[in-house]
Amino acid sequence: MHRMSEPPFQEPLENTVVIVGVGLIGGSLAAALRHRRVAQHIIGVGRDAVRLGRARVAGLIDEVSTDLAKAAAHADVIVFCTPVDRVADGVREAAGSVRPDTLMTDAGSVKQPICDAVADITNFIGSHPIAGSHRQGFEAADAQLYEGRLCVLTPLASSPDPMVTRLDRLWKGVGMRTAQMSPSEHDQALAMTSHLPHLVAAALAQTLSIQNRPLTGTGFRDTTRIAAGDPQLWTGILMQNAQHVAAGIEAVQQQLRKYQTALLEGNAEQIQNLLRDGQQQRAALDCP
Image 1: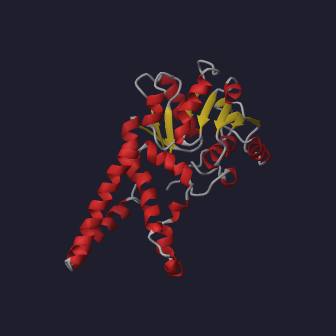
Image 2: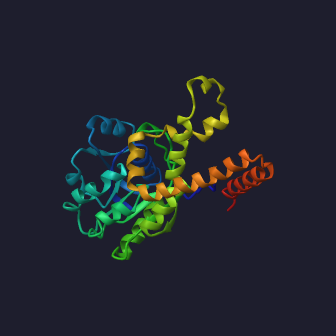
Image 3: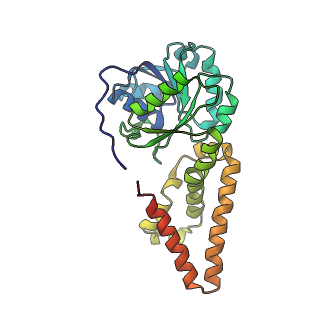
């Protein structure tokens, strides 16, 4: 994928950005904001003061706080990088302290439940930077994580246009491309492109017997790599998007049944056709 090479901004786009949840995603955002001079001042908010202190020592954030409401009062922008099942509560907690012009957003990979829960808070606009890693913690933060990747914005009809423009500029400021979708369209699509693959990788990993572990090669390891992700985090994602993921499971089962039937019938031509179709679909991912 094309790597963007725009120079850092001469003047910050935003003065104070509060990042709630300074793990891999939040830490990488902080690093990118600093590297590109998108933010003048970065406050990290979380529940573990010791971990936040270490993130500050690492140079990712300028200030730490375990009091969201207090930090929110100073924010021009707040980005919630917490697990998806905690975002809405965080938005409501911050909403009582922010200024009317404070922009709030998140980085969660499920949008409909969050946007529904805080639909009355018009200065919150959902977003999903489609970037990440199976690695965890701010120690794995990467200032280049978002460059050239896509961020989906999910504004509602009530979202003020100037806020949407600011949000678009913020994500483009860290090197991302942007697109807009409704929350429901986003969740249906991401169920197939992100959530289902994680579940399938985990299911495949579970089929491996202890005796066969020494026999695994790069194929098995590459296919199941994302199963190494945080189970607690992914439980929240899957449960928040349960209906769409369940529909995806049925679609995969239908495809597997085609392979199963062809194998039991000894139909090599059908197997080859199915594999060729899969090959072509995978090759299309590398096309512009």
